[in-house]
Amino acid sequence: MTGNDYEEAGAPETGEAMDRMRPLPRISIQAFCETEGLLRTVERCGEDRRMGKVNLRVNKGGVAAAVNLFSQQPTPNLIILESDEDRATLLGELEQLADVCDASTKVVIIGHHNDVALYRELIRNGISEYIVAPVSMADLIGVISAIFVDPDAEPLGRTVAFVGAKGGCGSSTLAHNCAFAISSLFSEEVILADLDLAFGTANINFDQDPPQGISEAVFSPERLDDVFLDRLLAKCSDHLSMLAAPSMLDKTYDLQRNAFSPMIEVVQRSAPVTVLDLPHVWTDWALSVLGEVDQIVVTAVPDLANLRNTKNLMDVLRKMRPNDHAPHLVLNQVGMPKRPEITPADFAEPLEMEPIAILPFDSALFGAAANSGRMISEMEPKSAAAETIAQIAHVVTGRADTKKRRKGGLSDLMSLIGRKKAAAR
Image (cartoon, rainbow, N blue to C red; front, side, top):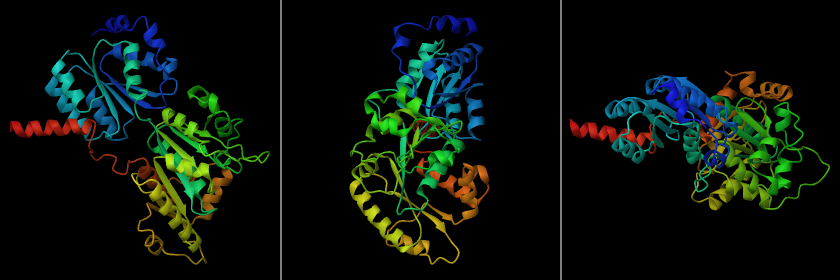
């Protein structure tokens, strides 16, 4: 396959097919190209307006190069692999990739053999798509769009709500630091939404002063779409964007029950992870948000009032969400000097659950971070607090066992290959 073949296949890129394609959400893609022609085609895709929110990296090499890279770092939302190998060799290489590939990662293979049997085997066992070279820009963007923008598919993004068992327990600080940790640890696009419209602190903690934010999204639901959302987001880091609260008292915020539902629906389509910072309130809209999200993290301080409130929260949430994962518990500010505390074991016993993390009291570190508008991992990346926040980020994103094989996707394919090899022996 020559470069000219790819250029002919990809020109022109106009027409109804491209016009009908919607912008892609905030996803990460890594492409591995064996030919210069495909490499140039993928690079042109990255320049298209529909890929404006995509974090795209183009690498030279095939499956072996992908295996080598992802043995050292997390896999993205989508891997595009070019391969000129025959069926047996390709399946063998994919078996190695499965060992280092997250189960949630999608895989598209661009092959050079029009092998229908191979296509059917790959699709049946978890590969998202197999297409035969040459491919055009419209082909590639169309395949990615079919995977991530299918209107009948479940929303792409995972939503995680952080709520405090009591005011002042540090839930907002934890939410902001976890959002930053997810975006930096996994190079994954994250949206942080501060739902405390009157007293939110996300803008202060990230040293930002955006003119617009979550208030416009809540009070103008008829305008809310991917384009409008982009205008409201403030960039905090390479992979983290924020919907800041106005944090002003010029009006009251007596919100309807489903006030945040349109916003949640849009952000789920726009980013793989959204972190929602809920204030310590008990209203119809707060209960509605807690019923909609994928994960809930309850932050508590080890005293009696927090224990009572946590028990009440857990009871209500378990009853309201019987088919969902139980809310996670984080104990914060543990070990404050001269303060009588309930031990973590005694705190967990009446709740019948163990905390996913215990954060030590460290007023100097957290105070310095707050006053400088920086995150804990930026201030002291090797501190116990930074390591604990990273642990929470792994749990709430389902990456606690990142490199372990799990059912579904590429792992199913590799299991099938293993059974066939065993049968042959």
